[in-house]
Length: 369
Image (cartoon, rainbow, N blue to C red):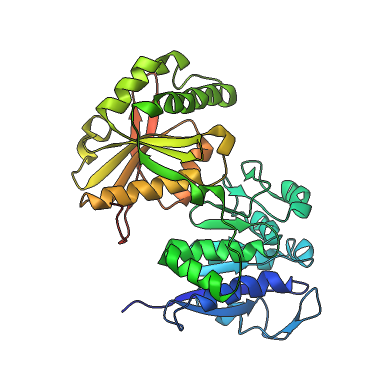
């Protein structure tokens, strides 16, 4: 029998009411009568009533000292976050709790607390558009700040924009855990128009010869970006002439992601990768290569969707592990895979290029057809 996941929603003086109640009610409405989520509030020092920025008084269910360990930690924003971001005891608790939780979700300026807690290193993040300057000051240099989105999903860490965007982010997490149908039903119960990010509306399919030019543009853009940002050529642009890409599509299982008529990502699927993995190779895995996301769409969660699709495809073939290689000289991308639950398995040096090797066990779910 599955145990309900604990969802802890943080409270502090001058927190925003809707930042708290939006995600709280979302998880509560999605809880399947308490079978899937157990939602409660927690404050740092005591269970004394907390006054929100709008004057609403909320009594916490727990103090941090006796709070049940959460599987999901929700960190809301509000005017009080500007003060509490300097509260090292609070940010220390957020960090420690986040390390044990499966997911951490910030709402609005709750991202300031995550930044000061040291949780946003090498991650993508967003916040209320009116507080983006504050987040730029608080966030580590390694973080990528994303504007004009409702939420950003890094795998274990999700940050949302202001106020009602917290409902959208919570619905997104419900969808990750219990499927899109549950999230849509929950949104209907709340009479909320679920605003999803573009990454959730992309179409992923097997590539054909008609996709060659679109795939080539993705590879060329990635090669140019690596050279501009890192100062070396991981791949030469001339390596992606049309004939080479055509052979690539015809000889391998290649998948493309499109948003309308725009090509936003691709990857290839392999089942025998002894060259890179050596003695670590095993048959119970699918191997993802050349996973590429349009640089115009950086930070929109498209890479996450490609990986999720690859996992479902691998599972449909009766295998239980997703394995991939990542350019070793790209710290932010390597950190992204680690924060997405991948385990580092080794290093491959080809002389002119090198890669770190990662794997992640595929959780039981419904495979794609």
